[in-house]
Amino acid sequence: MAIRMTTSPVTFFQSKLTDSFPSSKSHLRSRGNVKYTMMASTIGSSSPKVESKKPFTPPREVHVQVTHSMPPQKIEIFKSIEGWAEQNILTHLKPVEKCWQAQDFLPDPASDGFVEQVMELRARANELLDEYFVVLAGDMITEEALPTYQTMLNTLDGVRDETGASLTPWAIWTRAWTAEENRHGDLLHTYLYLCGRVDMRQIQKTTQYLIGSGMDPRTENSPYLGFIYTSFQERATFVSHGNTARHAKEHGDLKLAQICGIIAADEKRHETAYTKIVEKLFEIDPDGTVLAFADMMRKKISMPAHLMYDGRDDNLFEHFSAVAQRLGVYTAKDYADILEFLVGRWKVADLTGLSGEGRKAQEYVCGLPPRIRRLEERAAGRAKEGPMMPFSWIYDRQVKL
Ligand SMILES: [Fe+2]
Ligand SMILES: [Fe+2]
Image (tube, rainbow, N blue to C red; front, side, top):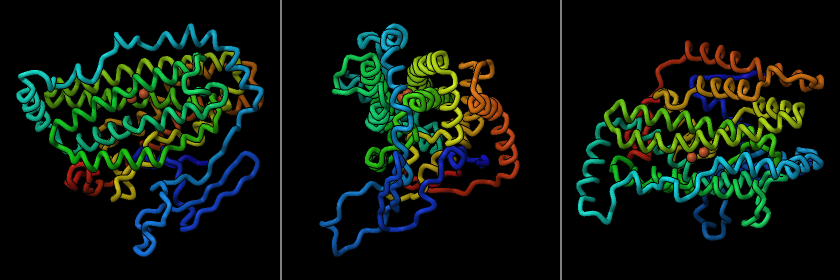
């Protein structure tokens, strides 16, 4: 399939799942392990006569869902490396006592100086532009949809937490990772609440909608696909939080820069762990892993919050991403850079002894970053000035896309 690239990374990242099925009815059919769920968005479809009888439906629904594509015998690989994971992956978790907490970076409500500290925080926030708060709110909402990401990890065969308190290293990792990540949303949420620049109710509604919709990373219950996805995503969040930190610093808000920076540092540590798992998979099963890598990239890495909705804007995620792209917080170039980094990190070009299919996959992923860059440059050359767009997160004030 040809790559399509526009100025916004979103149109590139997002598989256009909602475009093709305008039907208002839902259908579910199964073919092997592929389930096609065809549903239209329910936005604006409420009928006044049957309001109380209508079952709850998510605002954003995904149409094509492939499940359990990994051959079941490969589950054994993950069982066989549990000892390795304990020694090499759990070491990337920080003991709780050594972890930062959101409170470390926020005014202390029990201190006498609380009100002054809040006033200072608000004065600093006033130096930042509305568009910055659009990006920060979108990043916060993405972090706050954490229940979805834990669910996603627990869809993966062979590594899921079977009981909710399982003692396999995979399950220990997933719970502790979630617990570390939970601080990101807490910190950003409280910061945004105190800063007085955003409509918290609209932001909170967006989070509720997003968790209700879930996400579709197209990882098909396969830990190969799943860990490639998380490697990519942790680096993507490292990049974007790092950039919001840089912007805050440029506008003189060193405290906010510290907030975004400390979150970025966590993402980096998580990236190290996930890329190490995939490195191990390349060592054990180079063919299967390179095929998974190519598969994931062909499908494109969708962003975790791709089903975002605020009750008003049907294209909220695209609009949010366009602002992130324009501000340089997360761009199509970053997408290519991350991919190039991972190709190098896993030494994909040096793999030998691959099958014919494996060699094709290797060639594809190694050639992809320059291809994406070329398309991106061409699209950027054609790009026109973006329109102004109101965002409910900032009381419908308009921001240029
Ligand atoms: Fe995070
Ligand atoms: Fe993360």
